[in-house]
Length: 118
Image 1 (spheres, rainbow, N blue to C red):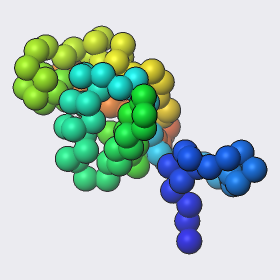
Image 2 (image 1 turned 120 degrees about the vertical axis):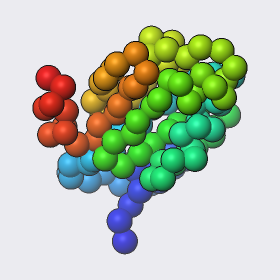
Image 3 (image 1 turned 180 degrees about the vertical axis):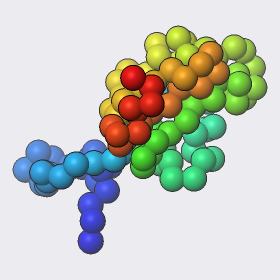
Image 4 (image 1 turned 135 degrees about the vertical axis):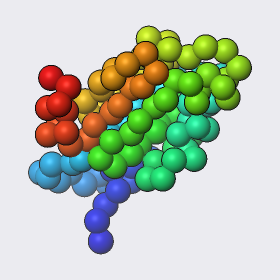
């Protein structure tokens, strides 16, 4: 059975399992905030996206790619969300982050998919 990339979150170091494989996973970690909760709520409704709430952080993980639409987040948040505010809201990310336009930020897990944006 394949191990999920989120399975190690709450394990001690001695219980973690490391694999030498290439992942096509991508995601963001955010400090818990009003903005982060809204981003998580919007993204949690999308297929293939997993949201994990921790005491002070929120993780949003996806497979292949995740598309963050600022207009969707703005509508739910009740105030403007821009790609720049989005980047400030994220503590860290994994995968390649591309700002496609003023409304769309895409996280790619497969680096070959980024070639069109380089």
